[in-house]
Image (cartoon, rainbow, N blue to C red):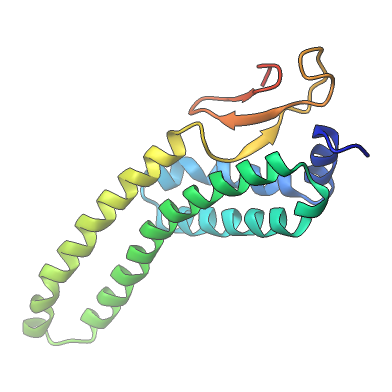
Length: 168
């Protein structure tokens, strides 16, 4: 195969990366709402997709790999910030349950600060999810503008669009 979109499209399909990409998209609405499990699953799918891209980088178009890794890295940082605060908050809450009530009250300022920082991190994550700079996919359509190869696509809040042909 030539080093064009058809190679990446075949790879994405054959190795289930489309499913990982769709998992990222499927978990996004719940993650936007702050759902702890959705944020965790979003992080897992993002990490797996980044690892797969690195593994197959030698046989994929360099520009697709570079842009994909950059977008996923930015998304991963935003997810990681929220997830780290989720883990911290859960650890503090678990420890607090084991304390006497009068001692537990001393943790309230820490719990409030974790919640405040999480809200800020979640806002950054939502902004990142809404941006058009994270995960790319292939439109999978055949049209004159992209030569039947499909084109890289950027996620917009409402739909996919192919940067090669705009179809999506």
